[in-house]
Image (tube, rainbow, N blue to C red; front, side):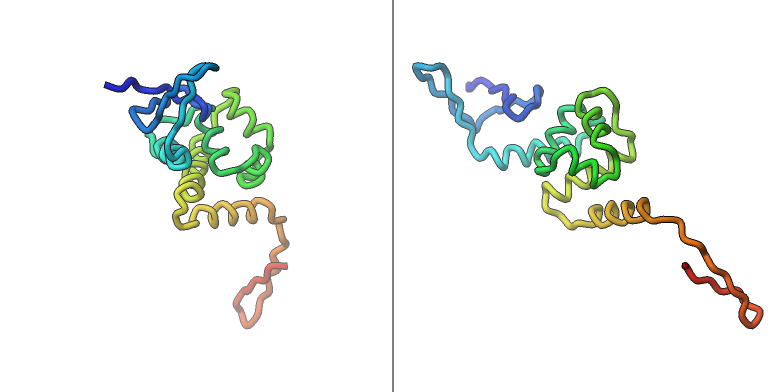
Length: 150
């Protein structure tokens, strides 16, 4: 029976491959060849997105990288500071539950290339967060109040 391979090149310490790899012995040491790495990473990402437990810091970072986002880009998308993303990835703080749920949904849409509903929701949230408070002008006409956003 083939031995399982501890796959750490993805930055995670809990990934083991049961097959799909070849180990070749060379003069410089063992060389490992992994079949279909892109699909492997997509499968790891989908497994992380759907796992019932909280994301570990390195899992959060793995998903961000799989989405091809920098910390700064992710921070901008979720309207948080770059430091917030960095602290989550270092394990200095946890993403709060709603943030992690949105992050997982966003990652699922980007990585699995599913409908972009959550992307639209996040964009709308950012528009709302960036919107300034407008004066609301009220006017009485024919004994009915009407409003207009100034």
